[in-house]
Length: 73
Image (tube, rainbow, N blue to C red; front, side):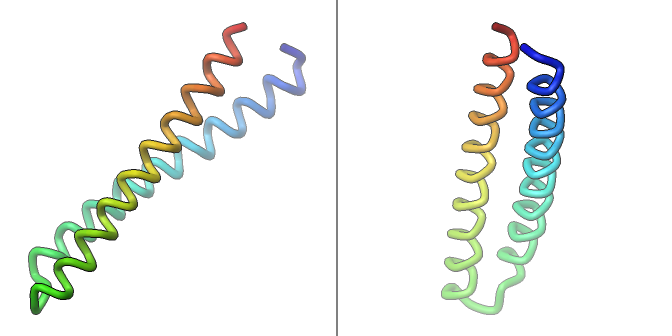
């Protein structure tokens, strides 16, 4: 891996890790909001938002793993 590739990898991995961290925080905030939502309709919408954030977080984790495995070569 060239020095440029390694630098790009490090920058990408830091950004992905930061995104995952922010998604985790957003999931927690939505979960809290869902518990105090005024009605079932609002709770369902918040719950679906939580599910979608979790899927996005998982996808970013997979991308990070792919980057890491490519870096090991």
